[in-house]
Length: 233
Image (cartoon, rainbow, N blue to C red; front, side, top):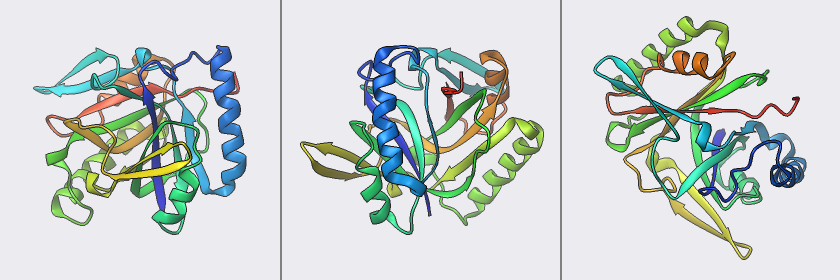
């Protein structure tokens, strides 16, 4: 089974520019983790600072674009992994070694592997908790049909993505002084929680925003758009 691990920390605590010495140190820590985790990692990436993010909402049929992440919370997402394992316990044994302060772990209903992440952006879909639906329900099927339409519209610009199970399936991981602390649900008490993501290829920020604005979300949902760091640069 696949799991999405959203890596978070206190705002500005680990948000460094990719060309900074601090970022290089963080990359080295994650390289050590990836060597340890091995084939359990099937996707992921570091993200540019949240100051370069964009939030996209649908307001009356029009896209409302604001700079920055989706909400003013104490924590921000700095990267993500997609992990594979037979069950939650096995994945927790891997995820506990991720060098971040907070990890939001979500079981994935499906995952389309990313083969090429160069020039890509992560479009993280967020929905109100009350709008969450379970796989196999008519509402879920209706939503999937809308995403299939988006997939046909976006074509080769879609380089990967996946859907998440409802928020009551999420687990928040914190490690304090070597002790593993687990809590049910997402890490932050916000009105909107993750419910899926796309990895999209775009030439620039404006193109990425224009494409992401076509992703179907609920009336009160939004998309948090973040550029993925290209380590080949």
